[in-house]
Image (cartoon, rainbow, N blue to C red; front, side):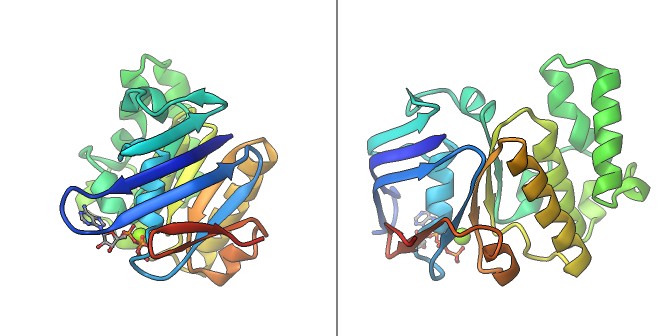
Length: 216
Ligand SMILES: Nc1ncnc2c1ncn2[C@@H]1O[C@H](COP(=O)(O)OP(=O)(O)OP(=O)(O)O)[C@@H](O)[C@H]1O
Ligand SMILES: [Mg+2]
């Protein structure tokens, strides 16, 4: 489970203040983050994955105070899909995008390659394996960023508007993947306005003007 406790955060520039008394994201459950544009959903996502650190309060990972953990240590538990996927693609080719970090972490290259091939097939990216990531369509970038996220060993996933740019078939693949991982015990926090995605789980947190309100 990951959680925020008594968190306050304000951006260094601009007057937006985010606050959250208690928000819990259990393992094996999908928690949906709803709320209008500019309400603070992405800010909440950034606080949950350590990209932003609270001015006050705590980030808890499996009961431990992770507020000051280095990003790499948080990243071993929490995978983060940015709202703008092209910003998280940084390797020259599609295949390398999947294998670079695991190999850097010293994982077995053959196992890594096999896992990458399997994810490419699952997300319909096999024919793009050697393509430059710069040339991908938005939907292809989104699928690749998701596949790259699943290459890591995180047990918790933060997905910021993950279905943006995906057509019906690819949305279905994503919903099924989320369900499959959830059944295996993964936890999800998902910011979305996608009605079909919202049907995946009754667990909701609504963000309004920087405040987090539990809906269910
Ligand atoms: N780096 C930043 N510096 C200053 N203000 C920021 C920064 N990033 C976001 N904000 C402000 O924080 C507020 C919340 O933004 P955030 O991106 O969290 O909203 P959101 O709910 O994700 O919106 P959307 O639905 O459009 O994605 C907005 O007013 C935004 O302008
Ligand atoms: Mg956002």
